[in-house]
Amino acid sequence: MADIIQLLPDHVANQIAAGEVVQRPASVVKELLENSIDAGANSIKLIIKDSGKTLIQVIDNGKGMSATDARLSFERHATSKIRSADDLFSLNTKGFRGEALASIAAIAHVELKTKQEQDELGTLIEIEGSTIKNQEVTVTPTGTSLCVKHLFYNIPARRNFLKSNNVELRHIVDEFHRVALAHPDIEFVMYHNGSESFNLPKSNYRQRVVNIFGNRTNEKLVPVEEETEVLKISGFVGKPEFAKRTRTEQFFFVNNRFIKSPYLNHSINSAFEGLMKDGSHPSYFLNLTVDPKTIDINIHPTKTEIKFDDEHTLYAILRSAVKHSLGQFNIAPVLDFDRDRNLDTPYEFENKRVSTPSVEVDKSFNPFQEEKSPSRSNGSFSNYKKEPVAQWESLYVGLESKSTKTETDFSEVRFESEPETTSLFDNDKQVETSQTTYQLHNKYIISTIKSGMMILDQHRAHQRVLYEGLLKHLTVKESVSQQLLFPLSLEFTSSEMEILQGLKEDLEHTGFIFSVFKENVIEITGVPINVPESEVSIILEQLISDVEQEVPDSNFSATDLLAKSMSKSLAIKTGQNLTRFEQEHLVNSLFACKEPTVSPTNKVTFITMSVDDFDKKFI
Ligand code: ADP
Ligand code: MG
Image 1 (cartoon, rainbow, N blue to C red):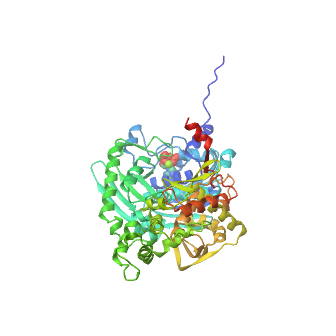
Image 2 (image 1 turned 60 degrees about the horizontal axis):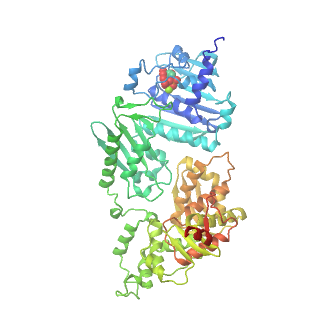
Image 3 (image 1 turned 30 degrees about the vertical axis):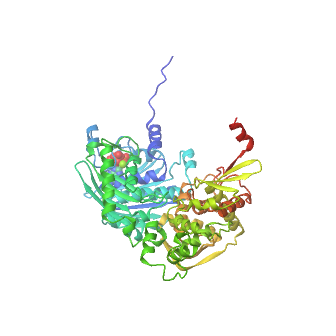
């Protein structure tokens, strides 16, 4: 039989390699920015059109290339950064594989202009799908400009696979952030569709973080500094009370390279243990410096995962450094008086209670009556924390929650800060008679039905109730707003603003009233009738995170997503103690829904067990 093995032509090999290096426009952005940094630039411009689908251009003032190098740079395995495999272990450049430009040129139209300082004139090269179309001498400033147009023009499958402009832009901005955070000493500017998205002057690390994430970030940063023989740590963690629902503010850099490390992330989480609300994630911006010999960067084509020689030691050092910083800056909730009232924890609540005696205003106070007296508890609690009570009640859309019992007063307060807290007065429930519902582990509601028993998941059930209510408001467009006494001002990053802008109209249909909606600030003067003010920022954050995770090709509907997201944020949480009244109303409201059997995300809301089922078990 004839021989059948052939060497793949270069352009095919390059296209295959491109599959690994270039997944989406953001990958090109990363490679080009990194090349500019490796070229010693101190000013880098990124120009994007249509989320990178039409144009990605990076202009730097680095050292440029000679005409020969410019031509060679597009060859596979052509690099100026390493000479031998040994060099891999003393790397101080971003690139070294010599693959990026060859890969990009295989799947796009590329135009390179470059000039070295000592030369009068520079070089222009145009390539399409690995074929050189033009090379000439040109007038251009010192440095390099690389223009990538029509990415994936010759691989329609890949092009079709790209996500919506919003999603692709989000990825680009993420890459831009990562590179810019790793290099505060370099000036970065980014333009999208002709307008400036970021302008980051050369600065120190703290300023860089603030320039990217907004002025309000400054107050939440806690410095972390540690130097040991194996590891140097510098950077910031966010104070726990500012923790986000999303993981968008979590950054590790190892030797100035952004990396992903679930293991090290875990070590930070464990340092924050006990300080975080459920479902929120600490922010961190940490630079780790280690001996290049102790890491292997070569394990992943995009170099975002690296292997450490001694991960366990790094874990321990990192954890203790973060813990130490949190302790040193008095992050213990008890001691921190400057906190956002919306994020109150039970600790602070107790503080407040001590500092303002309730007796003065509570005429019916009876010291011998203990906490069981409704009047005392109402007096002492509602004085200092009026809103949560109202807010808690308003969470019961369609439940008409109206319990005046002491136990709810406590759970109301605890709900907002710590949904897991069980009621202190669980026993009180036993007193009530003719019970038809029963709450199991503050998670399930058990109810007797004709055929036997029904078990309902309280969180999912409430989500369904809220979801249908919200959808109605959104589609009928006749929402009811409640005016805020003082406008609520919230700051977002530009990319978050872009997402919110897309949902603004829908948000207004639910009852939000915006007085300012520009640049990085949103000012809210009215909120939907059932939404507590303290939940607003959580709702919006959750919404942004949900949009980011949404696969736009699936039947993306902004209205539906908004209703789902808000119902998730507002629904009674697992762990919340409910009065019998509330339990019964939840059951009734669920069965008044159009689709009571599943939650908005298609999860089962309740199951039933018949007496027959039980009988079988008792055989
Ligand atoms: P790598 O970065 O892994 O070396 P690339 O394909 O990204 O591989 O780049 C190939 C070579 O082209 C680099 O090694 C560098 O010498 C040169 N080069 C690329 N971009 C620039 C730039 N912006 N300025 C100067 N030289 C560059
Ligand atoms: Mg490179």
